[in-house]
Length: 468
Image 1 (tube, helix red, strand yellow):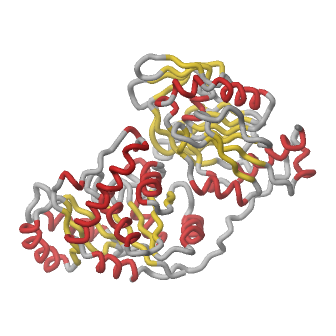
Image 2 (cartoon, one colour):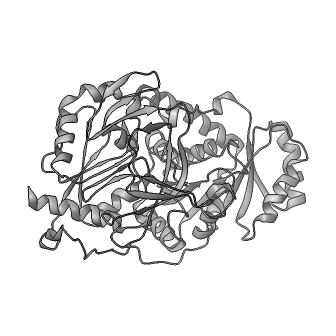
Image 3 (cartoon, rainbow, N blue to C red):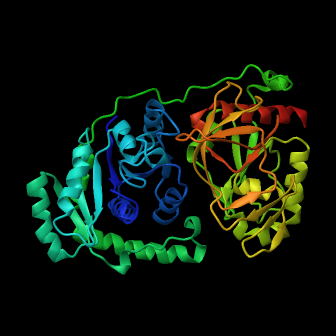
């Protein structure tokens, strides 16, 4: 497969790769190209921003979540009808799991997908020292994937002095610069949240950024770099189906194995964190997906057979969620009647009896879990994990599933049915409330890391389908 593609990466966080990525996406889209965005790592925010503000398809690719072959398959499957792919790196170029491993790094993703890299270097406060800094990154690049440098926060006059210095001494092209300018600053918000009335303002600001980008950066040279990307060997696109045969007390599955159960997915301002590949995998394995709003709808979608409640911002909409008593009662009744449910982070918080926000106000929630959720004032858990069941309910092939956590809230009942393992330290802790129909807890899951999870969830929905 031949696809034009480039990765925007940097030596460290805060170097400007986000503004460069956004500007490049906007410029390419304005040129009439069908462009797709790929975020390295588990973060939901940048893909949401790219889709909502720039209106391009966006998804995550993560070499901790999936091995090399599956990562390439996921990329190829999603990019088939596109003209151009832009990858946005995470942290520093070589920073992987735990900050110390290659696994999960931007560089490993570029290596796996054979994607050339444009390195964005924050030049503020630096003179000639920028040369050995870049030299070190080039020397560490054993696959010679770094094809160009883009200097951020540098004046035009100084750029004209530094550019030939870098190119002569390091034999690498410098494709442009961005000046230090408040207009280039895209404000970060709580977990990337942007309210509806801010969207148009941000779009206007990004248009200004992209126009400046065209003046100071050689987009044509970036296109040439993307054009030079090696052809990827075509691989079988379909993710191998993991069929489960051993179900114990849910043996009705075989009788309805060809049915298409409907999974109702909570999706609104309060619940918006979903990996595109998770939803696609559920659909691939035979589920119909329908959406509902716990904020605005008063009942669950007609004819649904399972619930998926993802993460998001329930704490910011706690009063509205609490006021929607009919929906809270509908969710509680469905779960109590053994409708299968998977709830992550914000969804887990919603299923509590109550949620106390950081101001100390407490609100009634769905009441599935007889416990309280509360703001701690500090980061409770952060980073990658692999989850393994104590008893087989969702991971019937006996394997683990990978995911991550990032939350300032905690619960008086986090569950203890699953063991989470940190990949670098090996530290373990118990979490997740789980039984034959429920998987409820703080961790965010990435289903393609173990497709058996998606298959089991759908088959549980099939069982419910014949029971009602």
